[in-house]
Image (cartoon, one colour):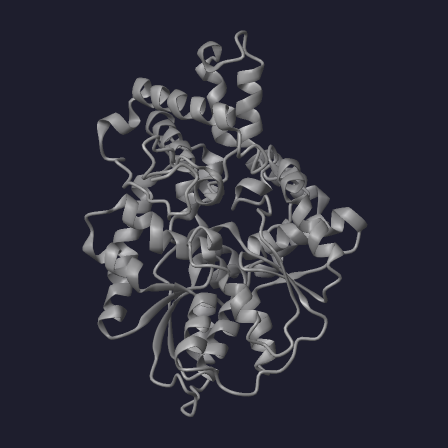
Length: 444
């Protein structure tokens, strides 16, 4: 591979089952090898807070080089990584197959996995990652849960900050009494048999966020697909494990991969495509799981059958064609391309989808929002996350568009908070599929 070439990067399977993967001395040596390459390059200085922390750590050392840096300072670098993958996908000239073999995000993941092996996951962090348990419990008391977690509830948010380390000003997802899968069973839209794509079948992997926190995204996706002749089934075995991956609990992610791929594999056997409704979850199914469980044929098969929702709509448009009658979206859209959508290496499918709308006026924002899953809501990270996402919020505000949209609903909420910080005016962000449903004349 030519340094800085345009060839697609490749990734090696994670050897997390090997004893060497968690060996402290070997890990420290590998971190020093890669950190020294990063120190000499510095191309990623403005991507996230990991790199400024690393470069400051080196520059402030006695020699100004890595040889006099204490390894105890490495954890601060690791803690700032959101696993967005942008250094690997868009910046680093030394990713494999280059002989330097630099995979910074997976090095950060290895460090966290070694920490989990030695110390486990803290109680508060472990409870926050249990999205299914939390979602199932909160939906029965949704009004109370939403009242308690609202930023306007200063007493409860101060208590939550003290107990769980969640910043009192960070917007948190709301909960709904009825899950997306329950709604889909009771109110499935009729499939348009006259649509050019009639005959397609797809299973919607709901994801924990859509299942418990924002079923409207799923309802919009289901309605758009039915309008275009696609028979849909909604399946939600469990969370994909991204929250556990963020903390380095790879074994838990591997277990999710095995069980969910078995469930969805039965639908693949029946001729269904698999659609993930949130980019982070699509990335897990497509890319991360096969690297964690490379010998699992079911995981590999699922990876090949999975599509992001925007990717799938664009595929229909390119092949069979969409149902006629798309309306206009007046006022234009400031569209944020989520990092985990970019990391799927599929192009700007949300932009391509919205550009199918007549007279589409789209301003694309292709930069990290700074949120990083649960990372951006934590007390130690929230202000840094807003700082990292400020250019995105500024561009969205200054675009003058009627709509702000992001493929990642958590990023969308974070951008909305960034805009509010800039000028005090709240502006909600929506998923692109919800805007596409509106253009189809579908009320969701």
